[in-house]
Image (tube, helix red, strand yellow):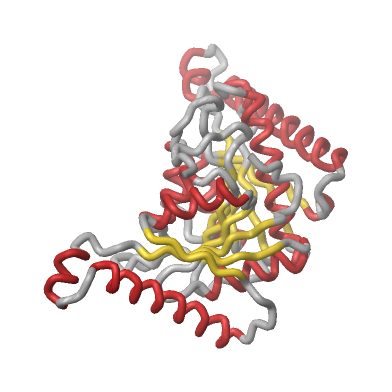
Length: 326
């Protein structure tokens, strides 16, 4: 697992059918700022009925597949020419299931950052992620940034969601490390535009109702309980940001704006992303260390499916992808 306090060094732009100009423009801005390398990856998934198609067309299946690959190569070359890029970018073309081939390439090539234009879902109007995107968010070992087709390549507002409830975490050290990774990556993607970075923690006083019901002072006790929970999370936020500043490994820590908002994390993150006009949400995906094949946690999954802005997903230290390298 790449230490995300270190800026991206090898960025992979995943391009599918219809191109991916937004992802490429975003990757170029990030690479120029951090002096990183960029490579393009594309994958042609053979039609499930390729043999039947070939038979009906009176051709060999391999010939049809080669034609599909040539078309994809031409599409990308045409897009690069249309964008007027002067730099030479290496294009890697594979066949198979796109998310599997992307992850295998990442594992084999020491890629430390993936950028992809999110798949459009015609049945809905808001920003959502299709099948390949969901698989990459769950299973790709390095950070994955899914950008909107009309995304600003230089996001001005970055929202980093952290979980400060280490007391109730199954693995507090993993959670603390993941929080630092999320903030570090948020600062990296904010760098090209000197964007403001909001570090958000949604907290909930879960026992508030019980305290009110069973205490002799009722609402007064419940209010004290809520204030204590908020103060505990404020101290945790202060400590986390002090550690980030003290490390000095990521530039831009002075642009961080902490936000503590009471409410269920899923609801708070969705509401704050809209209120702040976030152009990218950076968040960690929960997984148990030492276990292979762990998918994204339920809370993170719900958040990703409820927000209306692009997402950059960061894995915890020790994450092992369920996709094995070739």
